[in-house]
Length: 105
Length: 261
Image (cartoon, rainbow over the protein chains, first blue to last red):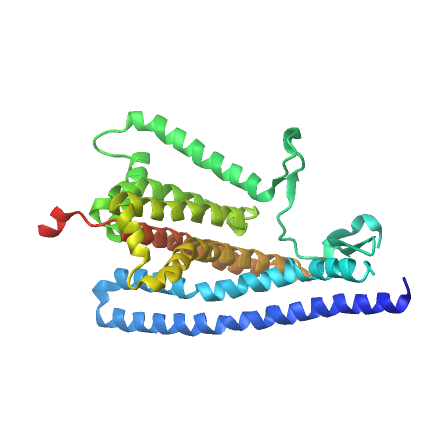
């Protein structure tokens, strides 16, 4: 194994790790949508409570339910970001690709 | 740095050589699902923190149930003390079931109360320096799979197999794949919601605890524990029960005589 090739391979692995970190950061942009949506739901619930204080319990539980459902997209992006950072599957794929294609020749 | 301080993060084979990525565990946030007993009782089965903490929570619930069962023999017509507490809890949960699922589904109260107490204790276990079992996808997926089979099972049992299959082709026949995906997405979104919230809390708190300054460990973690364990934990428990109740009660038709009244 010559040293130049080893450096190139190490650089490839480093690139994969770096872009995985970037990808995790970009995935978390999805936090935008649920944040705005839940804020709108909460503001409407506030209006509802101020108009009809006796329906506070129903409004709160409906709001929480809707917010929980709309939060799902944010949670998906969070899970993807966590996988990319802490359980990265791409480095292993890169290593197996190298052993199959470069070492085989 | 000596070799015994290092921990292998990932390892893979490259050109016949084993490459190991190592880290110093003393400088790293510790939120991993560590193995407590390796090769438990010679079964070749590794008991992780999740399983061990679930056992602790299970034993708490079982002991409480046995104590309640024994004390129930001395319960009187006019409640006092311990009986008051038990009756209040049961009544609150029956009212919750009634408002969410309707009067005819009151029988589900016991099942959902079990799920509620289990998830609540799992989420609150972060307060006692245990890793939350719900921060492991296995636990939340198991819970969600129960709900999934309850939804489909009650749908078939109450509406009949024909109506169940017909329901997949509604409103138009070519929307069938969408309906199937929607059915499968239900348990996934249920489990990911609980798992993601709890895991995010666990990671953020362990990152905070791993800061090297001593003054960050005074007072400030209490706020994090209040938000992530108490507030978020209780809210996610409530939402999991509420959503699964809604999903199950959606497929159960309202009895006719109730409508006519």
